[in-house]
Length: 342
Image (cartoon, rainbow, N blue to C red):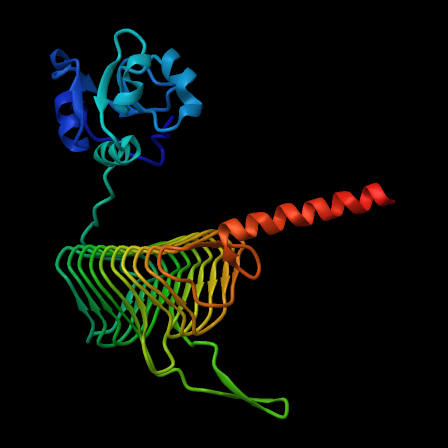
């Protein structure tokens, strides 16, 4: 259950209101004005709660649940316990996300500047923005309207942040331009030097990193992720990308629209991911690659060559996923044969 020390619940909402929020169909129609106070898992929900079913593994829990209402696919509606109201949709998980966001909306900024913050006189703060304790904002920086700047954030000179953006505690931003509705979690580093140097007889000469980081609207960047600025071209994160914790994105990398990058992925310099690429955790990319639109990369893969549009790859070095599975089976059989031979 949700701990009220950390989260404040909104509502209550009627089933009719929740159906509209979720884009779902009510069943039965007569339950329209029944009110619900919170969301809860199937196993612990009570008559005043809304739950959801999105995985067949939890059918038994669904059939035994005491939830007053459940978001579910029409396929499983017949397995609901007697008396449970249903919100029917073909995408229960998305519908649940919308309902949960209604009960637990994002915290709104508390306009004003903490007295311990140090904001350069040339910086511009948008109307309704919140600047937390210990924040440092450099000269000519621009912060949009209704932004939340968490404790001990450092925003370098000239940085631009669009409206309705939240920067988590301890983040550091330099040499970057951010769009609107961006969520940057705690400890993120954006715009630091890219890893570029020339080597001659064992000596390393640093190459100046003269580009920026451009982050488009509606991007989320997980805790302690790092996005290096470009070496001349910019590093670009496309609109709607979701970047998990501890991701490293090198200089000049370009992510298209709606990419999903799971935790501990490393993307080397000048690699480009086209729109809607999905990358599993701990995958690694060498530099100067092109990953086609809609491609998928399995967790812990090592990608060393281009991936065509729509192809799923896995393994190290990464190959088409079926080929990787065949290689894995063949390797296992080889090991079994050697053991029998012993």
